[in-house]
Length: 94
Image 1: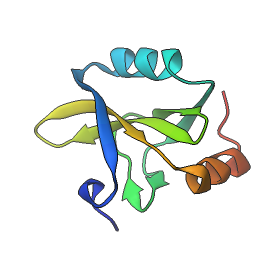
Image 2: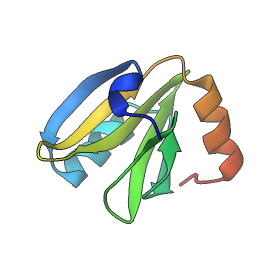
Image 3: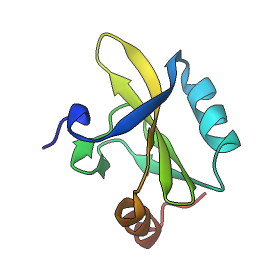
Image 4: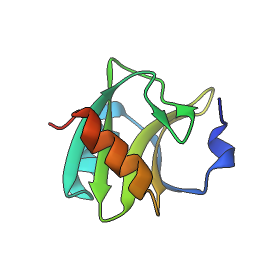
């Protein structure tokens, strides 16, 4: 399993509520998906509620991430065409 610090992400929102994260992702994405907790992006397991929002725009992914003892974040991962293909092929679309 990978660590979030092993991938080149950008923090877009921090210390937010689940609704604020989802609203941010929806507003900044062209496609919206909800994946089950435990879904992996580049080997990093997403934790949280029953489903976790992920948004796509071009070759960028926006996703909600829980940092223990810190809270909820929305992270941006550029050049993520491989992950976008995986997400679309698994059929988690809203």
